[in-house]
Length: 74
Image: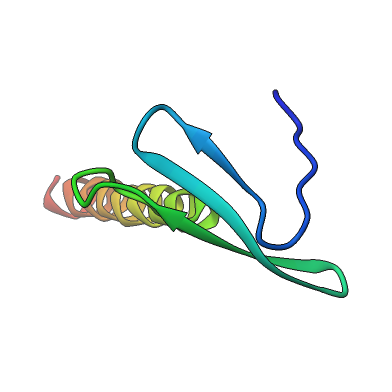
């Protein structure tokens, strides 16, 4: 992992068309601005993880429900 220190208003470039700029630092939080082409999705990591957990949670109860139904039909 590459670690880069930046001051407010300084930025880094990823490739030729993605720019990440530090816009504000307040306490233990930093605000960043991301400029990228529209076809590149930008999503917070915790949302991706939550989506995965939700997908898993929705599948498990269905399997349990099917197993219960099988037992009832026997």
